Image (cartoon, rainbow, N blue to C red):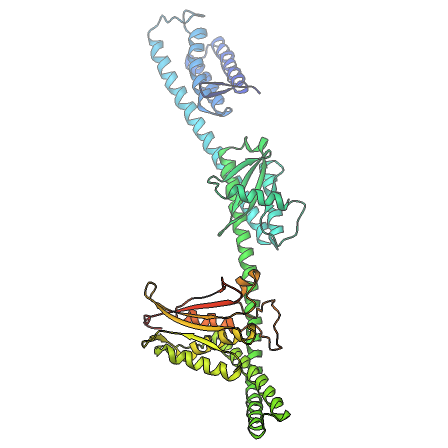
Length: 499
């Protein structure tokens, strides 16, 4: 089969041979009709039949139109006087030629149109069957690996090529139909970041992107020698199949995420219930231990060894009591029972209460306070902010050797409309890899403490939650001059309605 192109019009020699054959057959039939003295109209009908057959068994309007023109000249040449010339003696033949031409053109056009409609219907039927088969098989897929394998198999069959898939979903194991090379995957991701079209060409393949709801899930790779031959209908079908694959992948990923979140919520609920039960059970005996140790200290002289023993018992019980209170606060926060009672409170009173509590626990430390001299009122829940300051000061005490500086300051930042609280120490500081996780639940730094009273990673989480509930922010940074850490949190000066 040879295809010639001239001025954008493709002419297939196979269809040309068909057209010539049908017109030659019409000419032979015309001679037979004239020999048996059939009317000339039968000869015209024979040529019309040749035009009709040409339009039926060829693609495109060009062959039917060409057959119509040639049939007129053939009828004139072979069957009108004078024979074997293109001259016309009888003017009535001109009318016959015109009617014959119009009839032939109309017939060939209608036939070609009907043939085109039939081809389009067949293509749509094939598309529907292919999409139904793909969707039906994807319904039974168990994971991303299975989804990609099904898509590759069906696309390969429909497109008559060997398609492959590169998946960006990293939790699945490789499969023989899914080529997942880490370096290659990262290179493809980089190429597709700014891609506007649906595919790109690379390494002898047309790479069709699988777009998910939030990101690109992978690519379907079609060999370039096959991809360049895809018709518009096949391209539409390929896009539709890739969209179905993307929907199936999105559904699986969403289902996996729901299962993961459900399990996390279940575990978190169990953990909260356990923490709350343990904390409630510990509060009463701790209060008794603290009260008894205080009585022993009051009844003993400081030179008595029993005084130091009772003091150590009291300090450890007080630390454990603080830990229990943090756990109970955390469970209330997680259950949504943390209620804010915002009122205008004097900053010096809130700071003073927190310092008083910490000095009772650690009288060997000296805390520097820097707050405005004038009355400074800030909308806050005083009890909760006291807990924030107490947790931050307790954290500073744990990480600062006795004799080193611990400071707390408060300023009114008119530019941001916030009260800015700062608690700074001269401890070991925080390592850079700990910075992003410092406010996460149950996270503790890798710095070794000088005492045995390690935290369990709840204090800073509670601080973060309380400050954000007030509409503020909290951050941590290492001090630039010398060692130490500085925690800074803000509280808005304006009372938010319905809070």
